[in-house]
Length: 178
Ligand SMILES: CC(C)(COP(=O)(O)OP(=O)(O)OC[C@H]1O[C@@H](n2cnc3c(N)ncnc32)[C@H](O)[C@@H]1OP(=O)(O)O)[C@@H](O)C(=O)NCCC(=O)NCCS
Image (cartoon, rainbow, N blue to C red; front, side, top):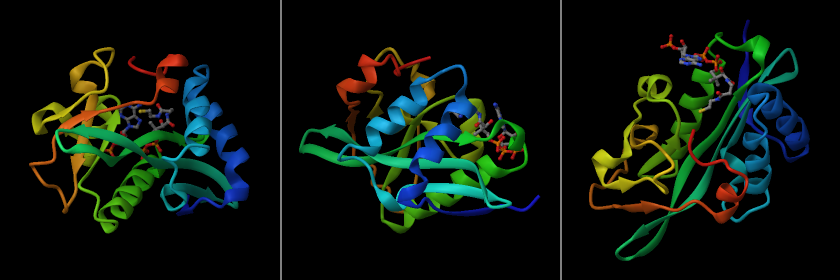
């Protein structure tokens, strides 16, 4: 069935949180983390996208900013998390549509790359590679090295290297690592 992908409206946020909770059940960290990011300086309105089917929200993805610690100081880079599709709407291409669209939006903004923590089995198909191969270090050893990935965008610069930092909140709620 057809679906549309568009920018999330501010008024839709509570509905998005409920959707994240349904997609990640029984894990509550993803929604908790998303809510924290939503109220943080890393949030970017234009990079929270929803998938709509029959006037119903069935998917969501967002990119938000994290600091990359480089020898020349901190640089804001983008992280993809969370990605959620309504359980009964999964395996219909909605997740793929959301990831492809949000990566295009990041490329249009001139972002060098997007990082994420996730299964390489899931994300290699979208061009994600081990971040360590490009000198981008994972925020914590709690994350298995192959799980911390990046996708290079047209504005990628190989000299941009460093360690991605997660805010303390990520650790406080146990949202780091498998
Ligand atoms: C993961 C998730 C977002 C995928 O959404 P979806 O709409 O079902 O994905 P799609 O139908 O677009 O499938 C995209 C590709 O991923 C594959 N895929 C889907 N779910 C997968 C999974 N759990 N593991 C590995 N591959 C998966 C599909 O086979 C498809 O591959 P192809 O296009 O090469 O054939 C969805 O299952 C979900 O919300 N899961 C719960 C939350 C979650 O785990 N989010 C990701 C956390 S990193």
